[in-house]
Image (cartoon, rainbow, N blue to C red; front, side, top):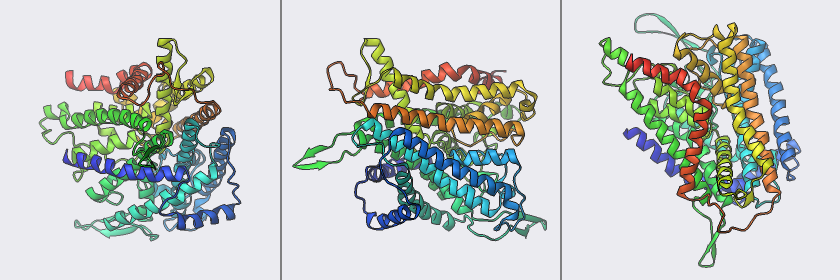
Length: 571
């Protein structure tokens, strides 16, 4: 419990200055690093011939899609041809077509779902040129879309910004420098960073054992900082090479939490009016609108963390009956160096902040312990990935003011802009497409032979495996129960489609909402205006999120983890 408290305290202390720094970058205000980074950015603009002219939402969305499409095409070729390219000391063959399709879509959509083991499926060139490169660019794409969305809602700029400029600034001023700093910490703690081939050593029992090597630290830090999640090694951050100590575990936790949390502060600062004190204009510390959203996300996160921790601490009653002590909790699938505390925290964080990395095997979680990561991916708004979680939570905020507006017979407003039919249709599209992808593909999987062949557990847990896989894909998370035999034509193609539509349909619709609200004039605050910056709205927002989740996902959850829990404890 002390480790959990310490980690969350560090997060709160670090997210405030990071939020201020990200706000200055998004709003193009001065920062301490401008003298250096301005030169770097201007050089990139010149070499790439980037026109920094402001864009409307259509141009912004099209630029994002086209840039991503080019990277997908090049990355797919590298994966298919890696056997004949350089930096392949272990002689790894090229990927087959459906696995290449799944992998390239996975990493371009910031999902990083892996149907392969990194140490045996990718050359060093593919790990760097495809995987690490896309970890930077997919994260930057999501952040850029979020900043354009926030500009549209705030309505204080002339346009939604320029996609290419936003992408360059977040990459050079945040992702690269912080990756270097935190990456050195990982190397200091024992995470390998080398171009040497795999090594073979003789164990103390006189046996020979192979150890995978490579540029592990470089991938490890951006996978967390960019809320990506794919591991260099198949066992991900549960292995000592990716996550050697408790120090690296905390560093990785803070890395995946800090930017999504800072995005909420950035939104609050963009929407908040500056106040004057003693003749000087003072920037708000948090911003009232951002504070409301941050509080709602935090409450949902803490509820999930508490349930996951208590469930894992309670242990497995079946093992208790068999004579195996559960005093330490359910330690199956967990690393002893992390224990229940760090494992429960890591599990909740990685699926709340949609990172997808794991320091324990989620397939071995207790039923209610596994319910929390599954539910948080279904919600997809508990901080979420860098920028995307904030955008999704704001959809629920718009839905909340719309419902309340209908109850009192008043046209709903959010941030001084009227919410009308056009915006609500787009909000409905964003909120419906996610459960449609999860439940639709899950139904297809359990009703076809190709889907059933991948399920390793015929009981309630088998359904949980299927739901988890498609929830992870649609939420652009990337973690898995890992009991699923998912490297097949069926699973590669269906999860690839879930990742693609789960990412781009939502982003395009959200940018359209931002463009629509940006074009509207602000209305004056009146007695009938519903406040969205107080405790009442925070509570209302939390209830809206949970009610929507219950209406869409409860039947499926009842047949999966809930039924499994009842079977274990009451049978």
